[in-house]
Image (cartoon, rainbow, N blue to C red; front, side):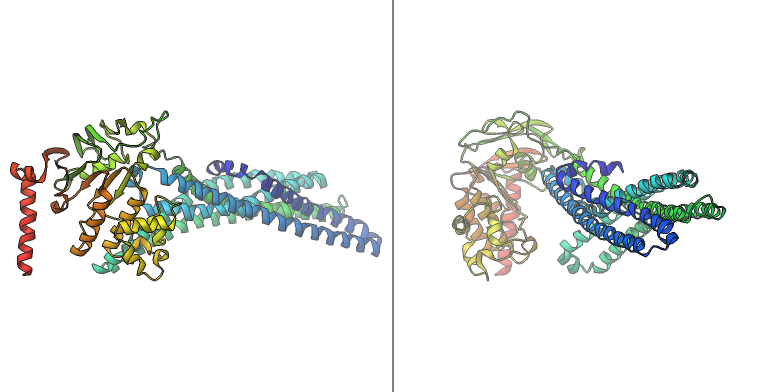
Length: 585
């Protein structure tokens, strides 16, 4: 149960709810334990004297106890389930908040579908534990202990026989419980892997269908489902054995004790009412212990889920705010400098991506970064936005090492228009205002107008309230790019990062997007990554990268005149464009 104890701070937030649930739980248990006392008096006194009024009064009292038990049980259920829902809601919110703050290096090695599984399936398992299972465990524990205490009070001799059998029951329960927790943890891990694969395939449904990969995907998913079934079946088998073994031992010992009690009644050393009272308490203790074995299995399974969530919560972001942050200049000048920066991705530490890279971008300057694939261009942006820290050297913004600044302050000074635009399953308005959620409709529309996006948005069925669909699947590539540009315009950051913003567009869309970018770049420090050299001809400077280093620097004309790598790339691209144009004619 140790993993579940790590969730106790969530319970501590709702002491009043816990107190109310405990009160009604104790009341229901006390009422249940009072019933055998009434039965004993009725058997020994009511039947013996044939007193009808006495029996009627006792039945009336039993009805009152039943009504009290019903009310207490209903209130216990209400408070306990409310606590479970409340704790899981807090847990989900905090786990999600923690995950969103983890560094990109965490997501480099962990599947998003597996993380989502922890947020859904694992928290549902915990909700069951903190809701019904924990309540039943506490209730059955109280009933079992209370019934055993009353058994000792009723007949010490018979109780000694029962209590002697308890170690034979409890120790196997603990052993089985550990096995159940391990198997349940394995089942949750397998289910998470299955969910991760399903999310991946569903997210790429068009690619799967385009390549006729339905059969392959179905076969692989079927194998993972069967694996999850086999693992879950093993966990169920362990829980079933646990339950059956406990019930056999509990009721077997009770039958033996009752036989001994019946002999005592026949010999006259015990009254029938006393035996009846003892029998009822034995049944209460036995059923409570039997149910406790079932609940123990459920709590053990929840322990595995809590363990997985705790691991996630204990994950420490590799990129964090410094203990004593340095304030960035206000207003920002937008000066960026890389000084002898070296870097390798954590998942591939042997592959050096940047090697002693140095360059400086002045305020308001537009600098393009070009080079072959794998040269390290996108890594420059990742380091500037501090998704990773360099292994050597420093990156500064306005003269401040970005590792010494607050992450929120740093990223508020940067706006990015990526090649692969992220569009959320929300309205067009909310997508544009993602970085500025309090922006007015007028401000959002002004950004869309500047991004050459207002015209197509206005033609949509619901205008700015139109839902974009998951990942913006209902929008064209050019439309998604212009929404991303509008998002960057609305953020109004002093440093603009353009990562292949027009690489996947047709000629008409590229013209519109480039016009929007020209307006966005005005009076801002801009870094542009581009494979298509035609998009960087207007840059103040062009940095040519190869193998993590800058190998050439200058304007388009000066680099062409040097006859180096840039000239080679330009010759290949522009010759290809001329060849395709001639073919089209």
